[in-house]
Image (cartoon, rainbow, N blue to C red; front, side, top):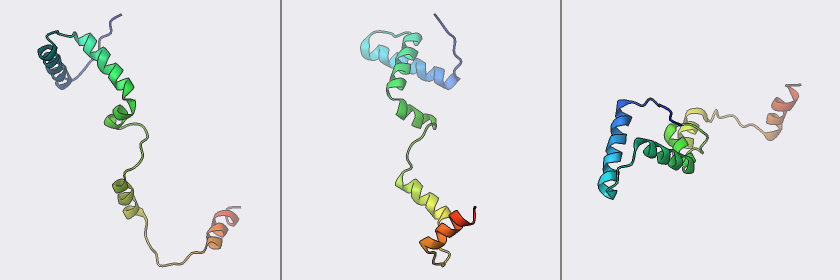
Length: 95
């Protein structure tokens, strides 16, 4: 079974260059179908890395990202708050 996929000109150029390099290195020219097949398998095996590259999926924040987030939201208002006050606000006033 054959399926046509649309790719950008840049991606087509990269596939051409990859095909040429593999041909130079091995002396055998892989078809574009074989390249896409193997790239898909590699993507499946390295799924987490692929998700990061795509910018999707869950991944833990780095220490720098945590610090940047905290700098934007965490502020000292100069008010001492006891655990009892927090419990009262959270649990008694919402009832």
